[in-house]
Length: 225
Image 1: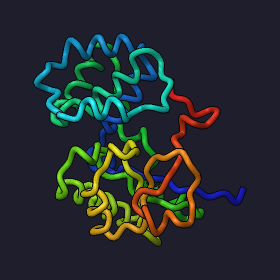
Image 2: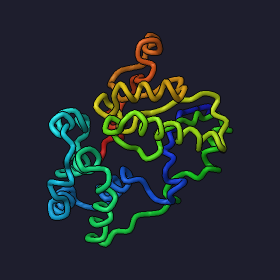
Image 3: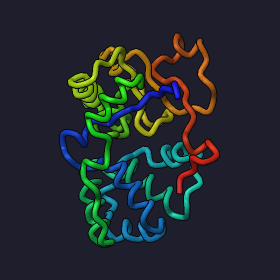
Image 4: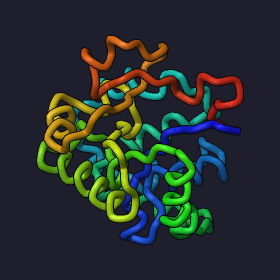
């Protein structure tokens, strides 16, 4: 149909062989009631597992465009933003065990052959980090590793005529000025965040590493459930 698109790849699953935590959360939300998931969280997660100090800030600035079922937004925010990184995977495993739910393997994602074939057909392939973290929770060195390692993997089998990146989660609270420094250091040409407006030519000179894109939930058939 002579159409093209940009596809942003989180590269971690291709080295670990496991589905990313962010997608495990999606799978659980698609299979179970949000309030049931929240109840399980209250039984498994202790206060010491949620040390992050920006809870109020994240509460006010995340998932604002989502119209999820009861409990789903709170479940996503708790496990994507609030819980300490070292506890997320084990918590998700415990929740899945309680629900007798089995996560898929790396076959959940497009294969490297699929990605290369998409590029050969005119699609643009970009980085979406390695593990899809909230980048603003990481230090500069960790952010550089997430970005550079992702590009190194993609460039091992794709030609990538230029480097483009999409901020995991998106929105101004998901990244910070150190993320922009990391992107520049990794020689990324442009990046996308989430902002509900059309792209303007002036954006490339003003906010090249935070270009606007619409959240899929804003489209008629994009709403999360």
